Image 1 (cartoon, rainbow, N blue to C red):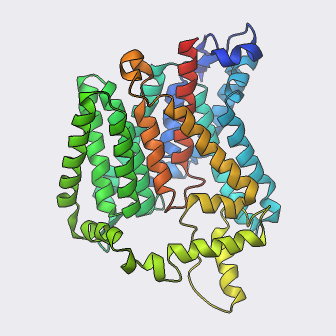
Image 2: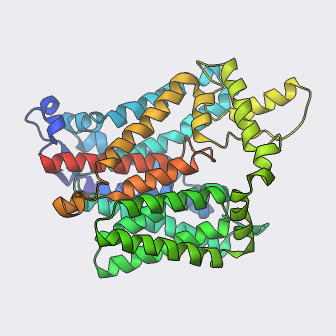
Image 3: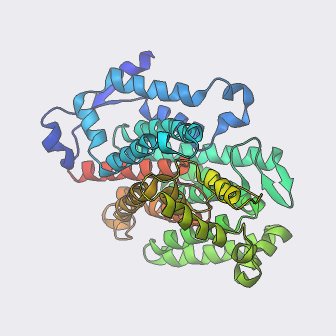
Length: 423
């Protein structure tokens, strides 16, 4: 821990000067490396691929290290700088509300476990936001995130299982749909990093993007494919001048190549997106539409306190039991419905506030005018990645996911750098 002693002081951004006065915050120089490790643990979930490392509880150890660094090498100005962004306060309120509702959950033990799993994600957020606010640090952590998720994808492609023509990663990391959503987000981050990198890193990032897209095709996930497409369109729309045409052509060519390389299962599942009358999600009792309809019943029963964090499946089981039926205890398959049903109206609104506020910050770095006026501030991939997540969240239960908190941390950190730079 001797490296912890290496700290740097930096003038705070304009929005924090009033509260911090003349005392500059301190930043540990090793923070970007610590942040990268937390991303590898919480988002890429690499320890779960290596059982021996997983037994060491790296999430708990990483959280303890983040807390130790903050306590030993941060001053009051650093804490205020961390607390100043609205995103931090809304995020803390969201987790605090989920914690307060644990005793009232349908299954308190499961609610406790869900909230406990959020602790390493909060530590990851803190580790990222408390890095020294420079674009180089953001690039470093972003590349680390891409590399970690690319490594996860490679291991999954090599050692994962093929079930009904769809890739399932090792262990209990992600199911195919969740994996595809995370890969779609990572692809946007990889493409953004490649556009700013030198020759060698550019090749690495473009190669990573190809591997990540290959992982999405292997999962044959419709939601992941749609998330990738929407993110690609948002990224393309942000490009200035001729680059927008180049990106648009690349996007169309990539779609054609993906269609040919995706395999029969992938093509068949994508075709069903245009034949909704045949989709089980619209007609089956366990399809997404029926589950979403039932979620309104669960919400109406407990509109303020919800059913408890992570308890949507339990609410489904209770609904079946009340009718003397047996069947699948379905997940929410929608992050927005999941947050609303699990945590009631307060939790649902906090979740929307969290995403909406983050999107507004990302939009400030998306405008193509920045490409010439302030190229270092031009980060269109952040909004593209968030849009990819928001699309995937329509189909998947991602309200407590590591990739969401990682994106929020990246965008909050980028906004801090933008304000520091403008000051």
